[in-house]
Length: 129
Image (cartoon, rainbow, N blue to C red):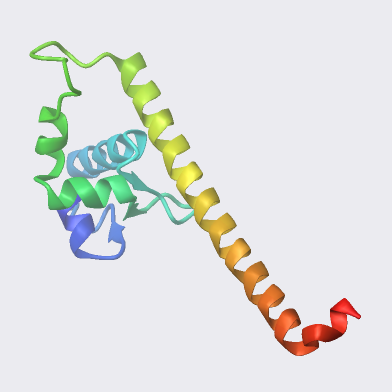
């Protein structure tokens, strides 16, 4: 389902389900992808999936099975701890927020410098008199 969602901008969850058990399996798979933050529901009816950035990454790097095989550094063959996984995801969210805040502040400072340059060129030496 992850690779199918990557092929389209949005994927209808119940598109290929003909039987009731297939509908149930598709809904559980979609809920699992949303729970793991690999996809999100863009519609209020929760019938379509749209990949998140993490979902696109894993779709390009082996799909859901590669996501399951990924171990954090130093974990070895042990099972992944759900608490550490949630902490890792929250730190990733904080890093992304920090990136976007610094990007926005850089753009704002660039605009302020352009305004300052325009004022200096327009008024010239008249400001010093």
